[in-house]
Image 1: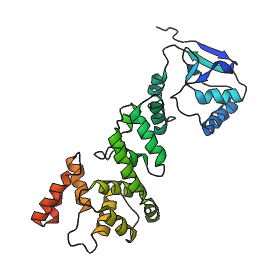
Image 2 (image 1 turned 135 degrees about the vertical axis):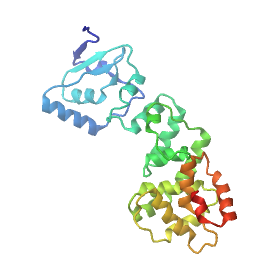
Image 3 (image 1 turned 180 degrees about the vertical axis):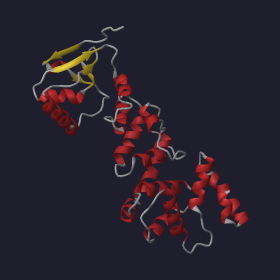
Image 4 (image 1 turned 90 degrees about the vertical axis):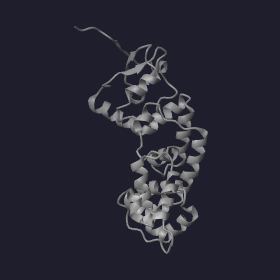
Length: 276
C-alpha cells in the first residue's frame, strides 16, 4: 500500500516566508556550512517545513542559505506543523544544542526556562551541568532529556539560590583553570561543599587559594584534594569525600542530612563510620 501524504512546492518568492518566534537562532556559521553543501551538490537537498502562514518550522538554515544564493526554495506546507512539532522533530537531532531547546521554551513563555536561560547566559564560563545542579542540588546527573522534553522546573526561590551558588563557584574558576585536569569536576565539588551544612565558605576560599593541588582526575579526586586543603591543621576535620559518597549512596534530597552524619562521627570518633 502506498499513498501521497504531502506535496513539495518550489518557489523563489522569498518574502512569503517568515521566521517563527521560539525557534532556534539562525547562526551564520551553520548557514555557511549548509550553503557549502548546496554548492557541492548544485541544489537544495531537503525541503523546508512551513505552517499554514508560511512560518518556517524546520529549515531556517536551509532557507537562508538558498535565499543568499538565489536558489529556489522547496517546501512542504502543513497546517498541523507548529513549534512543538519542531522541538519533537529535533529531540534526537544533534543539530539542536541544549541551548537551542532552552531558548525555544523560554521564547514560548516558560518562566522555568527563562530562569534557566538567564543562568546559562550569565554563567557562560561554568558548565551547563553546574548550572543545572545549582537549581537541582539533589541531582548530580544532568537530565538533558528532561530539558529537551520541556520538563525542567525552576521556581523563583530556586533561581535566587542558584545565583548565590554559581556566584560562589565562579570565585574558584581561575584557581580551577590553573590546577588543570577535570575543571568541571572541581567546580561541581565546590558546588556540593557550598551546600554542606558545616563547611565554612570563607575558610574554604582561603584554604583552596593557598593549597598545592594536583590536576583533578574526577569528582572524587576533587573531593579528596579539597578535603586535604580544608582540613590542614584542623583538630575537627570534615571528610568531604565520605560525605559525598554518603550523599550519592543515600540519594538524599538535601545536604542537611549530613548534619546527622557529622554528629554520628563525633560520637564514634571513627572516620570509617562515614563509609558505612
